[in-house]
Length: 193
Image (tube, rainbow, N blue to C red; front, side, top):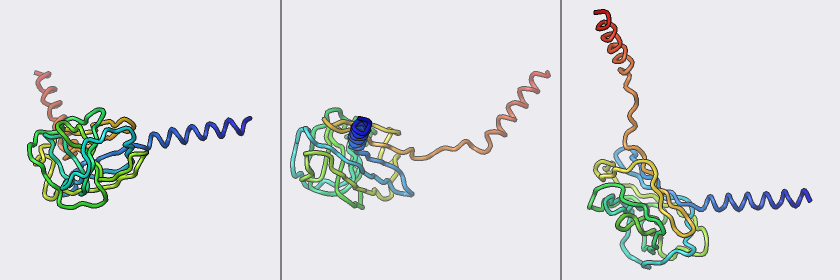
């Protein structure tokens, strides 16, 4: 009895872990003088509505005002998203990437309403995807990316998360304690008068 309970518990835990891991993440971050777009994880297209198949000439890049972010370069299939990503900036122009590795994955359409995958990607369960694109000599300001943090979109059986790293981490300036001490001194002097 105990062995059956342990086996059942282990099986249900493993199935929950497998379902939780079936997710795609696109990470967009500034690396030196470039913007790097990395798509990694698994995508489950089961039940997704195919919008277009074998679309040529798609390569990774960014168009923040159109809701497109993608990594890789390939012929692609386009699927409707159940819940779109939304816009993440104001640019009207596509900034294509110059360097591509791996397959292809992206989100696109007016407001990020499509999941874009390499043509022929299986639709009968989770599929691992790893793709990277680099937009050389660029940054978030040039690409007009204004959303930072994470945005999510969904397919019938999956979640896609796009994480925009902060373009610049602003540390507390070293002069802050000195400034606070100075303001405190001014306040004390005014109080004594």
